[in-house]
Image 1 (cartoon, rainbow, N blue to C red):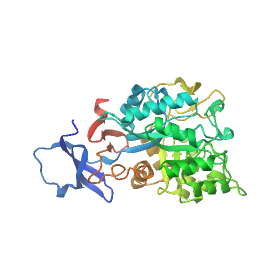
Image 2: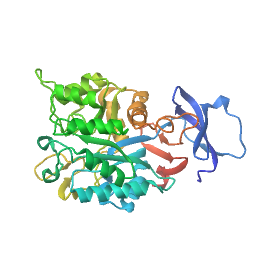
Image 3: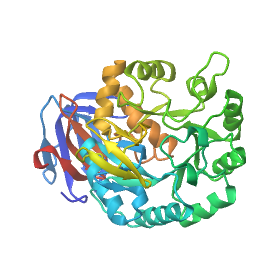
Image 4: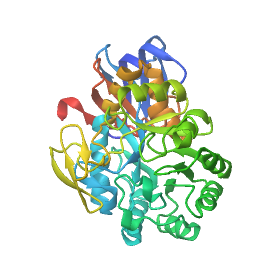
Length: 395
């Protein structure tokens, strides 16, 4: 189906931006949502193709994954257009229609190759695939003590001049940077990020609560993968975790695979932070959508089984989480609603990345990034900017 075709999706529950229609419809013209509402208001258009589905199905806005390294044996650090295309082809299967190509702590040369590749890729993206909407620079400006699976040998102090060089290499497509603000020059880089319109995220950080407060004042608005790679909560030192719970200025990422955080801790975080500030991410590796085995992460072997990816010493190394499984898990762990899920997978990341004028909800004038789920919340069909990117029956 071409983006310049007109088609109508009918006979299912539509979660639009402001209302849910039990028997709704969506009209898409040239890849843009042209109409949305109850089917009773639909005016017949003989030029439009009708897509009629089961009334037990529902349609939600496509997920925006702001923290994802790879999938299907491809990784952003491969620094090839083929790798990003593979990710963009694969992610609609799990309901993701946009993502930030996420780098990791490596040599400056390897990071620069990945940034250059992603910036160039974004200038000529293919229709009908998940859209790379920017780059997430995770590291190397992090705290060695909270490195997680990031290689220690390539960690460096925050550096404003180096970031500016990298942003130029990336054609100004770095949209989010994970850093440890307590490291030397951390607050200076945070302020520079804010000034240039880039999201400054606190992650892989051993910051005390007071240091997080200073970072927020300097411009931090985001927390990278809650619980993991950060100073935890103590009754005499709230740390990064306490700040994530308490500070309304912060959007907070969470990997809801039941492994990075126990279900009870997911529920605790959700009850405290709520869907108003939470963003579901996958933080997935190239091993996602592959069989069990040993794969590479930044030159380190990663052992992958059915549920978990770890380094040789047992350190968790990203995930193999699919976004629709994160949705299922979140609803199971917290009893949240689909409206809450939409906030956490679409609305909040779109607002944080300043994309809400064209993505993040089902409303007239926005990109037709749509995901159709069946009654079991499995993905039946995904549209990326108006083109069918995945259908379960053809997979």
